[in-house]
Image (cartoon, rainbow, N blue to C red; front, top):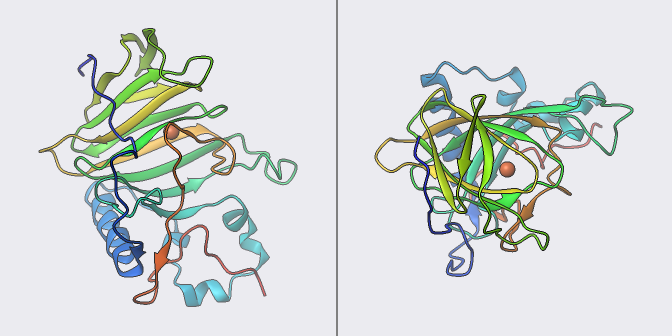
Length: 247
Ligand SMILES: [Fe+2]
């Protein structure tokens, strides 16, 4: 673990949109994630492997999957440069603030694939407290600022908990998580992360409060959360935003 000041990464100001994501790329990235998860013996639930044809026959019994955004989520944050700025996630469980009486679960869990030098851009959450966990592979680099009253980068140092041990982080400081290590990211703590160069992709876990992508992501730069997709081949698996309504 290393602490120190780093230059902000992940800003969108110098990133030129190259292209939409192609469905063939999404299929490939999901299959790469499957290999990574299988390599580290992290098993996904059955709905991870339901085909689009199988989904056509799934009824309201799977409403929890549809309504809480469970499943595959591959994003380039609308920038069209997935391998530079992007993330692959599988949401395993989640609650739902909008439908809280039906889904009172107060927590969420995800597994993610973060590639070497693949940036998840600077953001914080107003409500969600999340533990980011290196579950295997290379090292995960996380850079941090506390947000100030105007939701900009604060120039104040602050404390974070790394596996139950309080650490002081300077503005823009880095925490490097080796496999097995985790950090608790409190609300209003800006974070960006990427796989450390030379170590390969990282299997990253997230255990958190309810995940609400519609209302609880405060990106430092204005970014999209989901990709625009060019359908150059059929989807092998549907993304969490693509499930058909029950017939
Ligand atoms: Fe986050």
